Length: 80
Image (tube, rainbow, N blue to C red):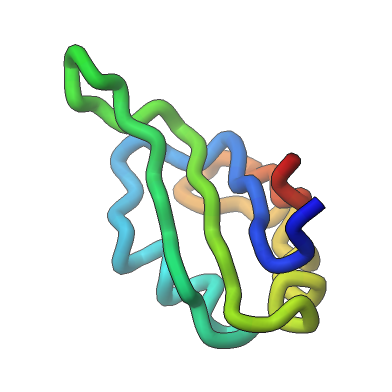
């Protein structure tokens, strides 16, 4: 298990990368944010992966599990 990479589920499909980064950067420096996109329609799929520079930042970001973003309750857990 990568202890710096988190799965973000149930994010609004209209959420922008900069908004997600703004929310999660409060927990530490972000190395990478990948929003899953449908290859055919090029529409967001409602989930993303975020990688922090430090394991401590990722652990702190787990606090956002159950946090509402745009009226949707976001799932935050360690990525497999």
